[in-house]
Amino acid sequence: MATAASREPGLEMIGIDVDEEAITSATSWLELTDARCRWFRGDLGDPLPLPDASVTRVACHDVLECLDDPVALLT
Image (cartoon, rainbow, N blue to C red):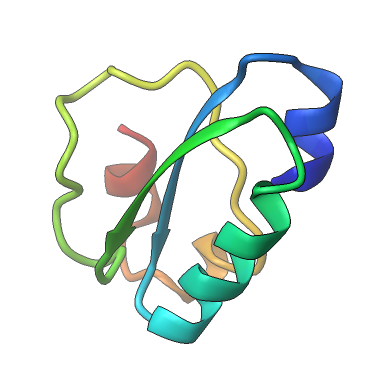
């Protein structure tokens, strides 16, 4: 996420993780950029707290292959 933030100034990101420690760690990294980020603690197997088709880009790292229905997440 920090790489994306450094390449696109003013980027608004949404982070979702089930692990509170991972959220805290990512937040500290992103404080070094000018990115705006909203965090949600949640399981990607559940519906996301976002309107459908409200995101323009998705970056998943070691995620899609772990989901029962990866298409549902991307939809």
